[in-house]
Amino acid sequence: MTVYTLNLRVFWPLVICMLTAFLLLQHSLHWGPDPGSDGCPGWTLGLLSLMKFILAFGLCYFLIRYCSSETARTKRRAPEFSEAPARATTSRKELLDDYYDKQVRLSPHVLGHSKAHVAKLVTELVRAGRAEIPPESTLGLRGDFVQIGSAYEEHKVGRPDCFDILVPLRLPRGLKLEPSTCVGEKGSPPLCSLETPRKSEWTRRHKAFTEAFLSPNEAGSAFRLTPAPVMRWFYPTVQRCLSAVRYPFEQRCSLGLSLSEDRILLRLTPRSDYVCCHISMGVRLIPAVPLGDGLFLVAAARGSHQENLWTVYFPRQEQKLLSWLKGRVPPGSCHLKCLQIVKAVRDLSGQALDCHGGAEWRAVLSSYSLKTAWLRLLLSTPPEAWEERHLLDRIEDLLRGLRDSLQHRFLGHLFLGGDTGLLPDFLALPKSFKDTASFNLLSNFNPTSLDMVSARLAYSWTHLHRLIRLGCPQRDSLGRGVRCKHMDAE
Image (cartoon, rainbow, N blue to C red):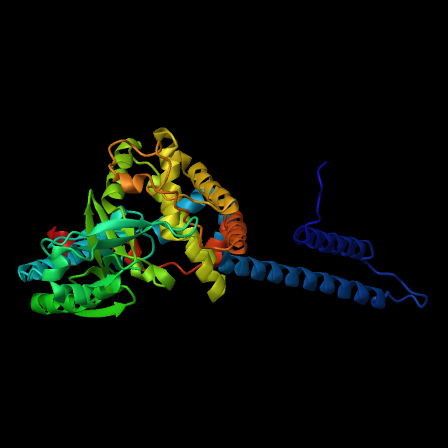
C-alpha cells in the first residue's frame, strides 16, 4: 500500500494562488458602477475590491521572496550536507575502501624511507658493538639484528613511527645454557629458563661472569641466566655503541636513548627533511638470546615470578609463513587489507572507552592476538577466497572467529602447542617446543572482560558508519603519501 505525505512546499503556494485567482475573479465581476440609493456609484465597494487586489499582490510578492531565499539557503547548505546522503546510500564495501584509502593505508614511500633510515642506524650500531671483541667472560653483540612487528610485515596502521628490532646476543665461549620449559599454571605460556650445572668447570673458572649474570635456581642445583642482569649490561653497551656512531647521523637527526622497563627505546628526531615529513621515530631494541632454528628468547613480561624467566619468539618462522602465504594467495588479494581494517576498527572503537576499559580492550585485542586469529583464518581458507571482491566476507569471518574465541575463552598460539596439521611442513620447530601444552593467548583475562570485548566487537561492526563518522579526524598528508625531493632522486 502506497502512503502519500503532504508536501507543504507545494501545498501553500497552491492555496495562495487559488485564493488570488478567486479574489481577481470576484473583483472582475463587481467591476463597474453600482449605483446606490442616491444614484451615486458604490465607491466603497470599489475601494474594498482594490484593497483585496493589493493584499493578493502582497501575498504573491512575499511568497516569491520566501521561495527565492529558501533556494539560496539550500544552495549554500549543499556543500555541507552533501556528504550525509551520500554516506547513507554508500555500501559498506565502498565505505571501507574509502576509509582504508584515507585513514588506514600507509604511504609505501614514507614507510620505506623510515625503515631504510632505521636499518642504516641499527646496522652501524650493532657493527660497533661487534667490533669491540669482548673478553671470554662477558656478553657481546652478535653483530646482526632481526626486524619484527607489523611495520615489517606490511600490516601496520596509523603512523610509520615505531619499529621493533631484536638484537641477538653472543654468550661467552664455552658457556652452555640449556633451555628448560616451565609450564606453570594451566593455560599460561611455556616460559623458559636458561640453566647450566652449578658444579660445571666453566662456572668455576669464570667467577666474575657467574657473580654478575648467573643466580642459583630454586633447587640450588644449577645456575640460571635471568633477564635483569642482561638488561643492566645491555643498556650501557648500547650507549657506548651509539656514542661511536652518533656523529654522522646527528647532521640529519638528533638521537636519544632511554630505558623503559625491559625495553631500550632509541628515539630519532629529524633535523632536516632527510626523513620524510619530519617523522619522529622510536626504535625498540630488544636483547635476545638465540636458540637456533630461528628461535630467540626475550625477557618475559614484568610481574610476579615471570620476570626471572624468558619467553620464546618465532620471528623467522613467522616471516617464512607470511612469505609463503603471500605467494599462495592470488595477486591483488585482500588478506593484508583485511587485517589492517580490523586493527583500525579496534582503535576506533577503543576511543569511546574510559582509561580502564580502553586498556582492557586493547590488551585483549592485542595486535598479536589479531594476527594469530588472522593467520589461522588464512591457513584454513582457500586462496581464491582472498580476492579483493571477497573483502567484506573475510572481515566478517575474522570478526566471527574472534568472537567465538572470546566466548570459548581460548585462542591458541600458532606455534606453541597449536594445531600440528595447520602449519606447512617446511616450518621447522624444535621438538621441545612443538610438543608443549597449548598456549592460550586469553588465559590471563577474566570472563567479564572477554564478554565485554565480544559484545563491543559486535557493536563496532554493526555501527561501523557511526564509528567512522565520529572517529578521529582525517589524518594529514603523512599517511597518504607525500612527494619529497628524495623521491625524484630514487
